Image (cartoon, rainbow, N blue to C red; front, side, top):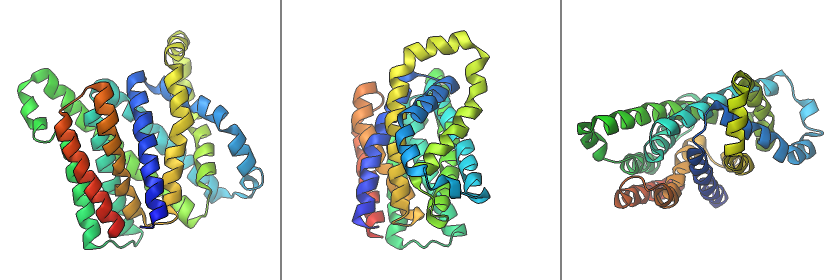
Length: 293
């Protein structure tokens, strides 16, 4: 993995952990996702217009098809993630989502896109997965089964985390194909697919307008933060994909867990900090192995 791609992933990891903590604190649902999408369309309009003025008119059916596909997959991903944050802890949902998604992405890239990975890369994936497991609670995930309420909460977190990870894998592969093989701009792909997301989420926002208005007033600061920084983290990843194999970039994104363990653990006061730091160490080791492999 080139050093430039590695640097992009590190920066993306900090930003990604930050906006997920904001989304968790917002405690929102599909209406929060809609609000974030509206703000995103407004905040990033100058960039979208400037970069797309001459490029977008040349898009064909295939390019617009990937824009639509990306929008649909991201809607499912975001809504399921938000629901997981309402039902369980960030330190359960986030690690499982981040761990299962890249693992699936790498397998698809290797099996169907013809990418190769060395033994060091395989060891890196193993280190990342083990680190994610420890950050999520390690053996304590099973010990909590004696507490019925906590056990149910953890099980919900596991289900939503893995389901979120499946959609992460799906949109990672689809979007990576678009930017790598169709040479689509990562910024434009993300910006225009956001309009698909907003359109799909509009019915949820209009269903109960009074509740939507109340939630908007309460959550607008979190939604604005997510809108302003979340596209940056993902676009950085897509640029990294243009420089390195998906099977290396996708698992390396788990470096965001290191920042989530240090920042999110302190702010949200969830879980055992020592265990999270140990998990973060495995993740860091796994990322280094991926960079070498």
